[in-house]
Image (tube, rainbow, N blue to C red; front, side, top):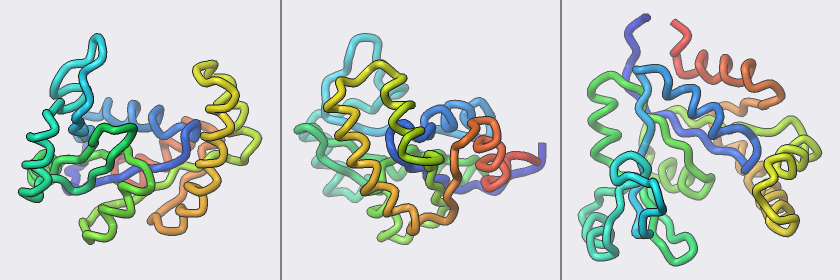
Length: 186
C-alpha cells in the first residue's frame, strides 16, 4: 500500500443514499479512522462509550464547546451532538484518513471554518430509487419515509457545495470511486 497523506474526509448525503454502507466499507482499511461523535444523550443498550459515541454530561459538553473543542455541533431532539477536534488532528498527524459521516448542516459548519478536507456527497440515482431503498429497509413508518424524502430534496440542493458528488447506482462502483478520490486505491 502506498503512503497516504493524512486528511479529513467528510461524507454526506440523504438517508438511503448508501453513505453508511460506504463508510463501513472504508473503515475496513486500517489507514481510515472513523469519527466518533460526542453526545449528551444517554447510551442505548449495547452502546459503548468511545466506540459508538463519546457520552458526555450536558455540563461537559458545554465546557468543551466553550473551549473550542468541537469542529461542529448541533442539537437534535433535545440532545447535543458534536465532532471533537483532537481525534481528527491526531489521525491526520499520523498520516491517516479521518472519516466523518455527517449531515449537510454539520458539513456547512466545517466548511465555514475552512477546515481543510475532501467533501464528498453520496447521492441516489433518482428519487424513486431512494424511495424504494427507504421503504425496503422496513424500519420507518410511511410518514417517516415521507419526511426523509422531503429532507432529501433539501439535502440534494446542497450537493453543489461539495468537492465531488458520487451517484450510488451500484455500491461497489460508488465505493471504488470514493476510494480513488481519497487515494486509498494505491
